Length: 159
Image (cartoon, rainbow, N blue to C red):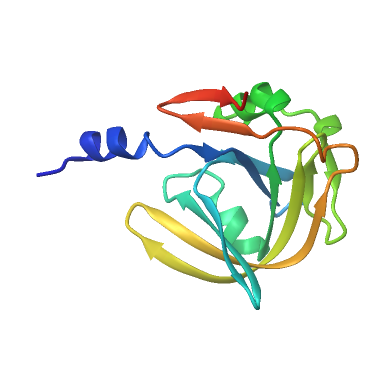
């Protein structure tokens, strides 16, 4: 038999990269959070998915916007990840830049994507956002950088 605690323990053994997923709220201000539930889905068409907790205070911003950005974090961005994992933390405008489609993206990340929400699906206590990629880029100068990883409840770096 499995329980939520056992499931969380088991899933913590799956190492993942760390992303910041962003959008704009009704007042056009950046809104975002740290997300490890992110993956590519398809090359034709270009699709990715992110899973967002239904209790997320800004979930309506993602639903209303119809677009979202994904910044793949570099190993040097652990503090940014922690900042976006905390509710209501101070997030200065200087950490963002606007992507070609107008989504706020993280400076100094490894790579970025901007997506139009193609579909939303119920996923238990989360909502699954399927995104059609409309913009993607590897940040210049970051081709040799390493990703920030999350494993067993802690941040890790590749050797």
